Image (cartoon, rainbow, N blue to C red):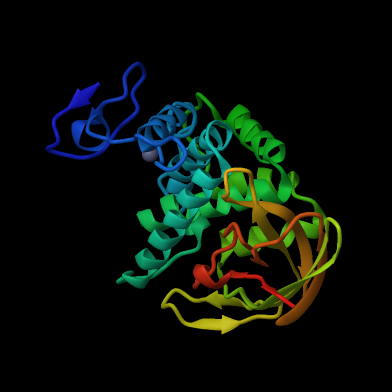
Length: 303
Ligand SMILES: [Zn+2]
């Protein structure tokens, strides 16, 4: 349902989604390979509010937007994931990452971890997109959905007392394996940032359909406090290492992607791939919150 662009938002009601003409009706989405169909995305977000915010109302406490806005962001992101190409999704996540980083740079009071977000859009929308996307990548989409389903079942159509972010985290904890429990602390309970980059990337042709990539990467993990002070912390994390080749259309496409346990700053990997590699790097899909995301991959130089 269209309304004039005195305001630019969309909202979810029981049978209608009012949508400003300023954010949907003038959208220009011509190339489905390149343009992010944000009208589709925003509509999915609003429909998701029928569950997150409508069926389940949240308590009016810190972290409440994680249960309405962030859960709707995640639901819409999964709709996007199943409808569009991984490249579109990657572009969208990069856009969310940039907006989160600039949002925190302009914070005038205190940045909170997601579980205690206090009306800060760059956290409950942008950071939440990144976090919930990474969460389903690490523990599996089915597991995140199972946690959401149990949370919905327990709290829907109920009067006070309403749930807080701790109630959702309890369900997420249950579906997260022991080896990955640390990501819950990083993602929801603290402000955790990474500084991952590729230092050196070469390859050698070892024979027919056999290429050996040598990759030197550097990884750092930091905790920030509410004023933005960052402290490096030791880590023991699973991080993606990826190698790209070219697909038939001449576009970059992943030919190797695997999580490696990283425990020290500098690491060297030797990876064998079957087709000619073009570029490679650490966390190439920007799943982690990285202060400089453009240096994660590097073009490969032939040895
Ligand atoms: Zn919303």
